[in-house]
Picture 1 (cartoon, rainbow, N blue to C red):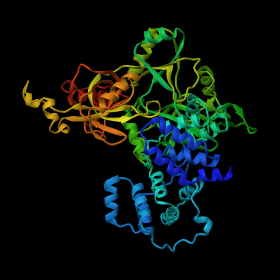
Picture 2 (picture 1 turned 30 degrees about the vertical axis):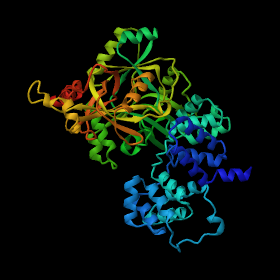
Picture 3 (picture 1 turned 45 degrees about the horizontal axis):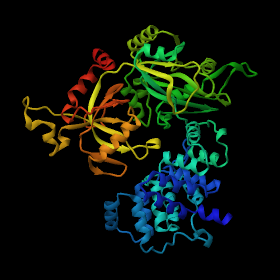
Picture 4 (picture 1 turned 180 degrees about the horizontal axis):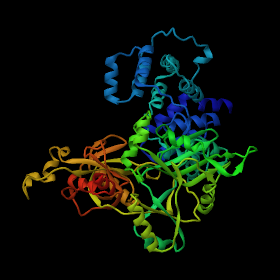
Length: 602
């Protein structure tokens, strides 16, 4: 049995499994391959294999960063093989992947390497744990000689690799697995390998944020023991959407919490001991951008507890809230706040130019335990126990509402103060990580809708795996010279250069039913212009009606604008490419937004 585990835990077995996954297009077969493989692994190897298959090297929240660049990889390959620059160009042109270059390099006759003197047992086959431990060594390196030391460790690994192992070693390092194995499929495979309910596995992942640990808990039948971990961000609770106060009141038929909806960055704040970290909506650590908030969070204490000296003591917690730019008693536009994220060094000038305020509206962990299963009423009482020292952290003001009229009055007040709208919350609701349900309801005023055409479609993840569910949308930037001039219709341009009149406005992936997504998938596959594997470029034919929160300027799209939080309202079967909206409409909506008009007046 020990020998069997030793074999299945080998890096060679991992790479062979990856090749099997890559060579099948069937989602179910991929899941079968992954689950069969995971079920053979010991705990130590299971943890590493799940990370690598999910496109990670270290678990979410880990302080370790590998940071091996293109140059280090290429220098290593040149130094251990007969690879030449002409070879590199050919392989890269054919595959566009450093992993394939590594496989080719290791397939050539290796030079005699005198830099390393391995004992015989060190030249035995690599195990998953060998790879992981060397990655940890690399991540811990720092100082002026660190790049040279990283290269030596990498070369040592590559020398011990067979060509296929070298391919996947580099793919893991560069985060370019591209085998159709992603976190959503691995979740299903974990459930199947250890005979667990898929939803239980997903729920555990939403809470813990660590898919490798969830695999271990599944193997040991301990999923129910999953808990929050310090500095490992959990998925945020999400709100559903309704469009009138009366609709909300009719649905709930009870007294509700009412809070302003702020236009900022959703922020999860972890404070444990003398450390504090800030995590964004995509669970990235953005503490570097808001050092003054980190400092203020470390001053927070518990109101009711004092030490022997009569001082209020510190407390551990995980908070949920919205970070907004706030200056001269007014919220700043979201775009101003984003400038902070683009800076790696925060100067006093930046801090003064874009001051911030963190508005806390929920708590997930308090003192020494998770509170996500407590009611919102209880969690609000917990928030009231926090003693806040600095004015850049405040507790969100909640009012009780019971009628549509009360909701509408609060909505107007929120808009007048420069915020987005309201969030209405069920007082009895638990905190549901990663779930969008009718426990929290967003009430926002739609600016308008835009009719746009799909130009790129990407395959989804999780339950949407295998379907084209993410759509890049374009509007027209073309004005006929004369009314009714047929030479200037969009159809006449489509056969020439579509890019001359279509401009990207953003991406949308929510709002459609499963049956509509299936329709879109089949239709889009019939319109393929270029297949890039994970996404396809399509003939611009399918028109979608899209709602959104705001429009902001963007240098990511050639329209110069981006839709914030777009949602697909309808597939416009009745419309063609000539009916899509133009850049002029987008510009007009942008200029008529509250914060833009207010800024212009100033």
